[in-house]
Length: 129
Length: 163
Image (cartoon, rainbow over all chains, first blue to last red):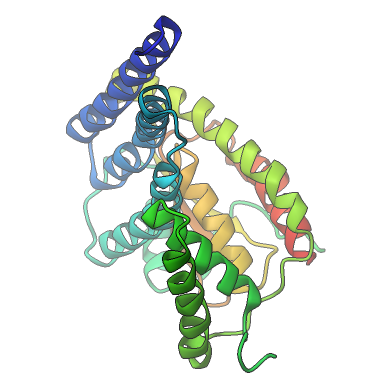
């Protein structure tokens, strides 16, 4: 039998996870262009997925009395793969000249980025180290 | 010794991951995990590109916690931005001047930048001098953001790799 504390914590984590994953998907629908949409699924879901995995660990602990570690592996693989996917998607978008929203700042930097060249007007002077 | 264990760390890591994947500690799985942990590094040895060594592995622990804290805080910020009016969002590109030179530290930094919400690393210049980052909401002064990344993340990555 689960104690009330466990049930409360599990419910809370599930609700938080659900809210964040929902906001992530909602952002995908709502944000104006490809680049901004890239942010919603890779990010708003990290906390959402994290709390759902934590909840899964808590549930196995409360019901079966053992610590399940597979969830940590899911987190590990997610943390390794998600940034790579986002990076490749952004790279492909640059090469396809995906349209951006009008008020994007410094859109000309995409042209130099596509060629893997330094920007024409760097944001800051390089510090000598 | 080096012929059988070209990368002792990878052998241990692979064995541990194998045991975690199977969620068991039975002798059979331990034996199979160790066998895989020995064979895979030997097979992958010709593919390896030399990378700088992690000089201070202990510094990785506070780094991970700082990143987790930042992910949670910034997740809430992005959630508020997504729910708020779309006109208020001011996306933009910044070119971040890198001080790191090697591939592995740059990968670690770029992944961290992508995982922390609001920023997404897009492209690295050929000479590894600049990292292009797409920012969901640009601050009034982009130098502010560059300084934040420089102090918060790049400085720590440099400490970990000792470069």
